[in-house]
Image 1: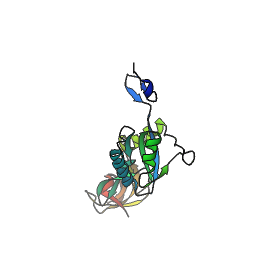
Image 2: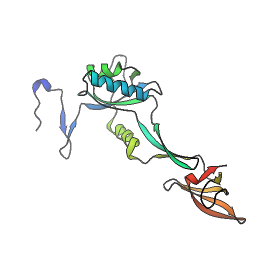
Image 3: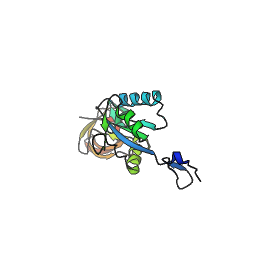
Image 4: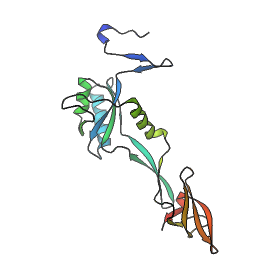
Length: 200
């Protein structure tokens, strides 16, 4: 049983299934920034949280990112990419003080979901937050493939180096393609890694 003093009645601590405590004050909000300034806003806000002793009210600041796998010049390259350019997520206990600190951070142009000027914004729903957090790390990286079925490709490495063929099937889960390559005048299906081919 959680004891709450009368003067702390705003603090609602709920015991979630399994006995873990979930703080009902902690909610996720979306702030808008100029595109390209997301990381700067995150750094500015984190500095303000520290300098204004707001760590008990503003808990986490995230720039939603996901890894994108690209195949360039015969190499597999993972590039972090912003999921929502121009937006930053903030987990906070929304009150006048925390709202003021976030709203007046350099680079923040406003909260998303504010009903009107001077009114506090609406928090993200839990399922929306779970989807975003999953996208940021738990899911496998997204593949960026610049060829499609029917495209002519050239083999850049391996035993079929310098051969050309046509993409017959793409297998993203294996990071492979099946290409029809002309060997001794006959179309032969060959399995190749993404990094071994480039579009002609």
